[in-house]
Amino acid sequence: MALGATALSGIAAPAETVQDDLGRTVTLPRTPQRIVSLSPGATEMLFAAGAGDHVVATVQYADEPPAARKVPRIGDVVAIDMERFAALRADVAIAWPGGGNPAQIEQIGRMAVPIYNLQINTLAQLPASLRRVGKLAGTSAVAEPAARAFEARLSMLHKRYADTAHPSVLLEIWNHPIYTVGGIQLMSDALTACGARNVFADLRDMAPAVDIEAIIARDPDMIVAVSPPGMSAEWLADWRKFTGLRAVSKGKLIGFEDPAFVRMGPSILDATEGLCRAIEAARH
Image 1 (cartoon, rainbow, N blue to C red):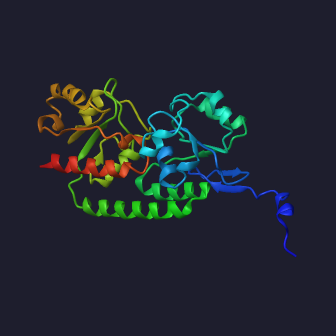
Image 2: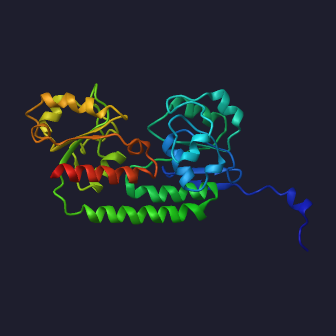
Image 3: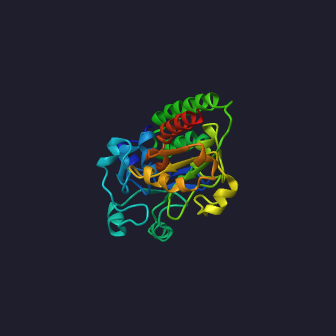
C-alpha cells in the first residue's frame, strides 16, 4: 500500500554527500537552496552550473554574469559581515582556499554551516569542478553541457598554439612591489595554453613577490602587465628604464586588463583567448 502525503512528511530526507575540489566530503541535510559565495570566481561558477537562483549573498566584484550583480554583497574576499552572514541561514558556503579570511571561514565552520571548497589550478580542472558544483546544487542538467562546451573550446585553444615558439613571459600582477604567479597558479596554466612559458613557473607560491634582480637574471622574452583597468600603461612605463631586458629592448611589453583573467571563473577562458591573441601579435 502506498504511503500518503502525511506519512511521507514525517520521513527525514536523506543527507546530501558530495566531494569538493579538495577531495573533502561535504554533507548537507538536503540539496542547498540558500548558498553564500565567498569569492567572485565561485559566484561565476555557481551561475554557470545553473545554481544562480540559489545564491543569496556574495562579495564585491562578483559581477559575472550580469545576473550576479543583483545578488546582495556582504563584504569582500578579505572580510564579510558575519552578522549578516548568520542572518542568511545559509545551507552551504562556497570558499576559495588560499583566498579570503581563514579566521572567518573557521568561524563559519563553528556555526555548523557546511563549507564547500572550490579550487582550480589549471584550465583542464575547471570542467570537473563545474560538474561537482552542479552535483552540489542539484543542477547537473545545466552544469554538464557547460562543462562539455568548456572542454571543447579548451581543446581547440591547445591545438591552435601547440606548435608555437614558447616564449618566456613574466606575468606582473602587481607593480610595487612586483608580484607574479608561480607554476601552480591558474594564470600560469593559461600562459601554457597560449604556447608560452611562465618565467617563474618553478616557484610554488601562488603569488610570489620577486625582485628586479631575479627578473633580470631570468630575462623574459615578454612582460605582461596584468593590471586593474586603466593602469597597465603606467606599469609598463616602469620597465622602460631596464633597457638590458630582452622584453624591453625588443618592445615586447603587453598590457592586459581583462578582469576575467583574475576572477577565476569560467570566463577566464575568454580572457585566456584574448591573452593568446596579444602574445601572438607581440611575436611579430
